[in-house]
Amino acid sequence: MKTQVAIIGAGPSGLLLGQLLARQGIDNVILERRSGDYVLSRIRAGVLEQGTADLLREAGVAERMDSEGLPHTGFALAFGGQQIRVDLEELTGGKTVLVYGQTEVTRDLMAAREAIGATTCYEADDVQPHDLESDTPYVTFTHEGEQKRLDCDYIAGCDGFHGISRRCIPEDRLNIFEREYPIGWLGLLADTPPVDDELIYASHDRGFALCSMRSSSRSRYYIQVPDTEDADDWSDDAFWAELKRRLPEHVADKLVTGESIEKSVAPLRSFVAEPMQHGRLFLLGDAAHIVPPTGAKGLNLACSDVNTAYRLLTKVYRDNRTDLIPRYSETCLRRVWKSERFAWWMTTNLHTFSDNDNFLSRMQRAELDYYTSSRAGLTTIAENYVGLPFEALENDA
Image 1 (tube, rainbow, N blue to C red):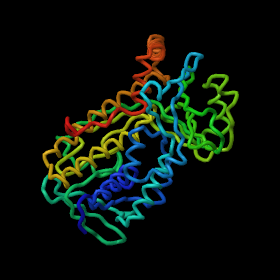
Image 2 (image 1 turned 90 degrees about the vertical axis):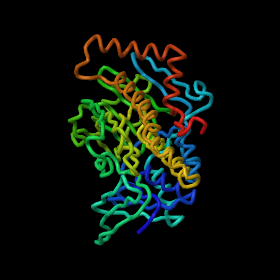
Image 3 (image 1 turned 180 degrees about the vertical axis):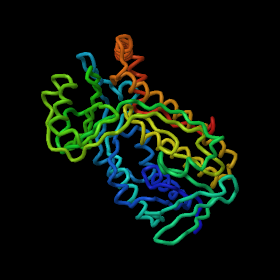
Image 4 (image 1 turned 60 degrees about the vertical axis):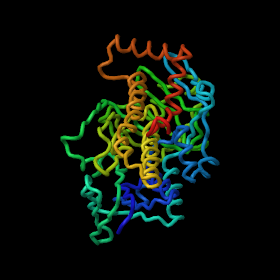
């Protein structure tokens, strides 16, 4: 087999990159170790930044997103008995976010790829990139019982934190930065109407809570728990009762409860690997970085990487701009670290930690009071939430 760009991983970042490249006439093959049904079964976030939504439109996969997604012009921060709305649209000059589930984004991208007849090898085992520092890299894998080789020009590692791509970078060239938080999010999905038209991030002495949604009839709620917690130990009734304790009274009073469709615990961690490239291998998404979900940055940051890789490879094939290749990592990392900062700030100031002393608690409150009582502070929150501008490969781009 031969292609121009080999993409490892058929999650949203791999599929989106493949779709964008295909629209530019750049051939690509996706290798995915799981089945398509498994990929679609993964429950993930659903808040799309302005730039992410625009990139999906550029990829030609936005019809259902634009008709079924829920535009949000703001969100609320609840703490200390008050609820303050962050007016995204007004504070950012018209930018908004769109609530549309990651599963639906993946479904749309899969359908688009099938429609153009692009190659995706699901249940590909033993995937291994080779000769990454040469001009002729290739990937070996096993598919349908046969050992195969995929020759290519470039490799995009979109295979997540546990994938093979990052492990192909020699340890002596890789720097790892990480912080693990001793907390997790217990999430519950239910076919109940959302408690509010916009997301509510609540800070409470008992711990953090988040009211979110997937649609006008499907809700997603989270409560902070220890990272050792097991979702099976929580009944639906126990979850709803604890959620109500952490919400402002006027919100809790209108909460509609119901049977859960899914419950799970997500750990919180910050992680960055530098550099995000090695030879002709580029890392994208969770293969290179992870953010706590508090700032709704995970999928969006992966799409930011896709934007950079897509525009880089287009320039390489259209204009022979191979001089831009070394800029991939530094371009991505500028935005990665800014997004990591915002997710860290939201996590640090909205959660309760076991070592919270009186001083730290007062500092958290002072941070929230300051940012929400200042237009400059609210603007900072809003600009980060709707998504910072994509970084350019060239100053004159």
